[in-house]
View (cartoon, rainbow, N blue to C red):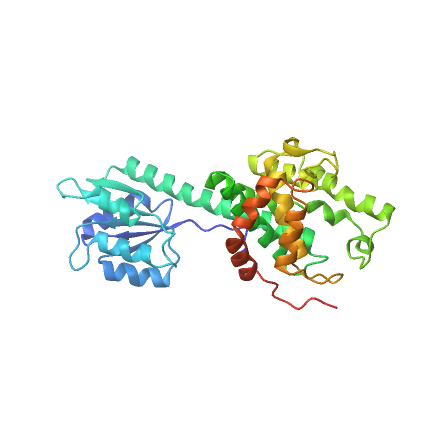
Length: 336
């Protein structure tokens, strides 16, 4: 099947009563592919064989209840993502709190009302699609970030480490977890403008001359231009980081010569994360610094290059930083 040809979602209907299976089949068969199981064991066997997008699950079944089936589904990493909707008779004594704690997303009561079943199924499948779209967006962001590093870091580990250092520092600075996660993603595009910098400058083993350094500095503005007119908060945050992560606390940075808290917090955080990882990473044109030497430079440049409060927090969080450094170590041998 072509990737452009999308199959209808497949729903697994689990109920020990044939009459209930028949009713749900009549309600859903025109819009979805359907699989049926008359017991919990049969349902789990089907889940091993078929790609299921949603489960309609009866609660009161012999041998294995719907709650027990749901617990097994959510306990398996291969099936945990599948939304489970419990289907129950009005006379059943149900513990909704238990069902939701097990990971169910909804309840439908019997006797079945076709319009309600269709609406609930459509809603939860839409949420699955929204989650899949978000995962796709994250994947594209990560690939875009790695594209900028491809010339001088074939593994793309720099953006993985630097962005996670930024997350740790953001949380330490009091930023809420959701915003810190957005920063983690946005920071991966901090050097996007480097894709426009010639190799002879980007990979030069020696010191750049004045003209070359002027070209190199342009990557901050180029990255911001690529990310201009953002339609989302995430891209707006990425643009801010791209254009400010080379600004310095004392105003001597580029491209605008911002100083102190004129530099947005995300830019100040990214500056520390970026420099620390650049110093402690080997490149074709330089050896890696020791962690001790890199930390010493951050402290020496505190109040000059870097926000002094953030430097203090970064040093305090060094155990977490080193865990990330080890986890995302370079995976291939750099050419020499």
